[in-house]
Length: 97
Image (cartoon, rainbow, N blue to C red):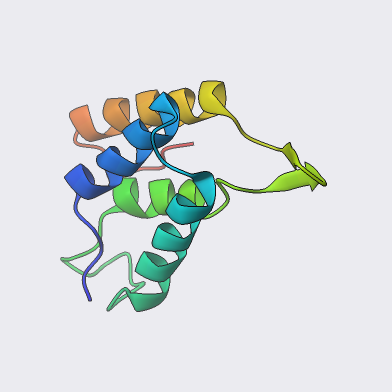
């Protein structure tokens, strides 16, 4: 399976930032996408650092600091979306964070 498209990743980020997606669902989606990626070779023509870096962030979307205490919330998710959009617009192959 290839990496998800930038559009697919952006939909997940938007859903989190707007509170329309459950963090656990997005976290699972990102983890599955990373596990099923056909390559983790950054020199592969199918590789996209912008997507991969966003998947890394999304794979921790539901982290908790304690029972029922989320590490991340809508403000952080919105910042991830902003960083993603800026990296994608710049045509960046670099890191999102």
